[in-house]
Length: 281
Image (cartoon, rainbow, N blue to C red; front, side, top):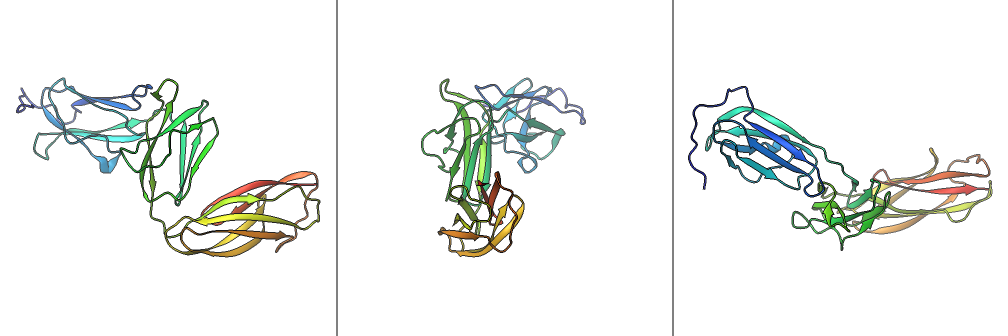
């Protein structure tokens, strides 16, 4: 139990009465340790409105005492010392930057989540559902450059973390993934062009689209060859509905294709894009 603060005098008002260190090793990424380097007991507070939430409660730190926090996400934590039980600050606030190596790249597109292994080694992805929603089934492994896609994810906060499955060790801080309650979001499921085509031939391109939002919506779908728009289509979908649309080319514009080369074919809903390669003989 903490005792009433005993002091021989407060710290100078312009000094920060604590130090803060960040550890990024695989046993505890990321760990922040705060040490009271003053001669007073104070209450440590996390100003999470100015940074990440890095404290549990308002711990009292006696002179020389330390407080540690494990498994913090990357970001900036902002701490400040206060006289216990009051709103009187002791010294200025301190910003602590947490920037530990992170192999996972997470993108949220409506109610779709793409988790990419951007590192140079195979990782195991774990879902920290004790801290948020339940996102993953099992503990999938991702090779470098591989992408794990989850569709139709319910609005919530989720946490994922990269692990070394063989060593059973954390490799990076957890990542918070927030899925908001979007009104409508048109997700491109696939773009299929079939086999190669001779220049000047008519051919078809199929696009799969799902409204992963919570309300009906309408979007104009663009079809592009490289950066040139060749056709558009108005599309209306109910919430959670999927459909396939087919573009038959030549479409609204005629393109002089160069033979014996590949073109990047992209479908763009304004919310999401999907691409594939089309080879013209």
